[in-house]
Image 1 (cartoon, helix red, strand yellow):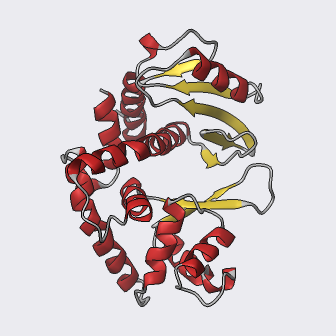
Image 2 (cartoon, rainbow, N blue to C red):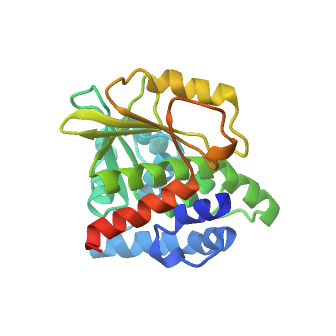
Length: 257
């Protein structure tokens, strides 16, 4: 079931449905480059390496405009690290639906950028860390590398599912950093920590309790692969089975079944 949940994160990209994890990664390398070219052609924007640079920066965690600008400059793609050199590329990727802007909770004008598609996130993360576009990687090495990124993709999947089912808006809480934070009517409605590992320990649960207790009026959720093997907690615990049921129930409500 854990492997199934990990596959579901990539199945948000319809063209990947039915593929195994590594098959999706291998075919995804060519797919995301072709997708970027097609989208930018449709937007009547000339394709340049700067778009690749922006997507790579965001996937590698450089999610502020200043960090993106510094990344492109370090690669020799812009004449200086000024944000003015990258703004039009970021805006084009936002318009094309390849990037999204997430509000920083508690800051009037603060925001972070991230990939919309988990597949483009994964492929550009692999390229940023290991040169995936240009360097041949053994299947064994690639499998280990992909497993490093999966927890982040699962977090995004959980956030998207809970937001859609409950009609909430994702925001980013930075201090302390919360995996999932969703608002309704400008108030924090739900906060969640995602512990995506083989065995969730007591210390993992206590850390989650400590973080989420800062939001007494919010619904507090701990997401794990299997709640039967999770240490006892006062948090609401959801696992893969709950996620699947939630998705099915949400679909029924949407289509009026």
